Structures are given as C-alpha cells and as structure tokens.
Image 1 (cartoon, rainbow, N blue to C red):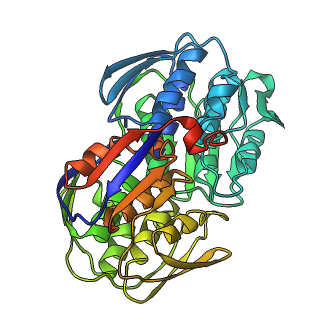
Image 2: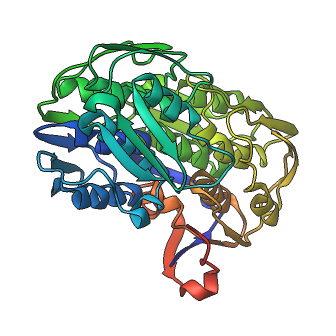
Length: 430
C-alpha cells in the first residue's frame, strides 16, 4: 500500500493541466450502459474509481476498449447481466448510478449498496423515491433490487425533498428511456449534472433544463452512440489553487471552465490570494499573508463541500480566526484530528469548525480518512516545516490523476513509497 512522503516548505511555480472531472466520469461511464451502440468518451481521468467502473462494465458484458491514456470506447450492445459483482460495487460510492442506467435500459437492476468514502449518513432514499415515481418496484437490503412494472419505466413528475446530486443524476438516467415525459423538480445544478445530460443528449436523449432546478426528460426509444468529451475537474483545479495558497508561489492552472471556479476563486481572493482568469486558465499567486475568512458549503453555485477540507487547511494558516460551516454532510470534519497533528488549532461543534490561524505547520505522520480529506493532508503537508508521512493514500488515488507527478513538476518535494499493508492498519479501509 502506498504512502506519500512530503518535505514541505517549497513554494509552487509552474503550470498544471487539469484532468477530466471525476464526479462526471463516474456517472457518464455507467450511463454508457444505456447506449445501444458504441460510444467514445474522451478526457477520462486516470483514477482508481474509473478503473473499477471499467471492470464492472466488462463483467456485465460491455466491451471496454482503451484507446489512449484519456479515451475509451464502450460497446454495450451485448450486456448479459443486470447484477454487478458485490465485491466490485462495494469499493465505490458511484456504483449506485448503475441502478438508474440498468433499470432505465433493461427494466431491472440488482446492485449492492455502495461503498466509497465515509463522511456521514448518505442515504439513497431520494433515488428510490424517483425510481418508484417512474413505476419501479424497489426493495432494499444488502442489495437494491428494482424492477419496472411492465418492463419499461413511465415518465412522471419527480420532486426531490432535498437537493441531491446523486439522486438527480440517477433519476435522470432512468428517465431517458422511459415512456413519456419526466420532470425533476428541486434538481441539483452541479456542473457534472450538466455534463451527464450533455453526454446523454449527444447519444440521442432529449433532456432540457440541466443546470437549473427543473429538468425535463422526454423519453426516447434508444440511445445510438457517439463521441463525448468530459469537462475539466472543478475540484482538482480548486485543490491546486489551495496548494499554492498554502505554500506561496505562482501556478498557471490550465484546462478549466472559469464559471465553475468562481465560488472557489472568490473565497481565495477574499483571503489575499491573487487569481486572474485568462481564457481557460487561472493564474494563482500568493506572496503575502493569508487573511481570515468564513465558508459555508452549499449546493452549486455555492462553495462546494468537496473543497471544504482543502480550504480549511489554508484557513488554519491564515491570520485571525476563521469559521467553516458544513451544510451538506453531517460528518465531514474527521480530518480535523489529522490537521491538529501538524499543529492546526481547530475546534469542531457539530457542523461548525472554528479555526484559529497558526504561523506554520510542523511535519508529522497523518492519514487520509477520505478522498478530499486526503487532498487536504497533501495541501497542509506541502506548507509544513519538515517531513510529513501521509498514509491511506488509496483514498486520494480514487479521485486525483497523477497527483504526485503534477506536484513534483511545479517544485513540490513529494514522493511515493510502498509500505506493507499490515504496517498501515488497512484491514478496514473498504
């Protein structure tokens, strides 16, 4: 099992190119199961979640052909199963998208409850409510088993009780091949929802309103195939922005969609970081002291919950007292104890963290307790005095392509070592 060794204190200088969006890719790849033909997907990130999904699709009978480092061809004309392997599904949270895709195309799906990062209760009740509204019978246990009455779903109004990205995408997929029209109200608006809709439309779907709180899907008979390019990763770009904010220096962050970055750029600028938008790049520079700020995570276009741990690491180095309010998940502060090992002064009360800025971090052994918490450990370690050892980096590799290589190229002293599993206490990592 890998471990990162970071010798901190080096400002970052140079260019970083952003990969395809993890949160879009993990929905678009399952959606390829709905295509009765061949689809080519480009700008796919090289991350472990994507590799797992390819294995699941292959097991179900899809032909997955890797064309190059970031492009794949998926042929789903010969799917022979609607029940993916328990062992594979339990390793990835996004496996729940298989339910909507398989149910929509084949009228049935039997998928184990998903795995992935643990940072609070993440029920799939809104997904199930949507499937039932479209005419599916759903039973839950260790598996979610869904069957469309009459063999095909039927379009219907679906109202989300809470704004849920996963449920919006899953119900949207299920509705694409349903008979009639579905309208999802109180839908989430995240960029990866728009990207999934654009992918499905490019394959022959009829989806309007993605990116607003009302999405209308007119069911079609089949999806035919085509070519699609995934959007750049908002959270990867934001993570590198926080890295230069924490360490100092200057980065040109390439291949971004500026509109997606505004919520992150605005907060960093408030903290004294210089951010300049140049076409599809951001110039990010920090030379002076960091200023205190307050952040409250919200659904898009608000500040993303997936950037909360990284911005907290930066706030811990800012002058004065900052505050982070987590309004999306109920247990996303587990990483705080790890930041404290580096010298951070943070007190958590429920969904609020009060952060008193310190002059610097000191290197220490820490661990990644989930994907974005792991990214926060890297950001903090890059700024720390001395050496930081980061364990459980399997979480980080779920969502960041070549993190170590990209950071080394801009001046970070970071390396990967292999440590036997028994030394790392990995028996329950899941």
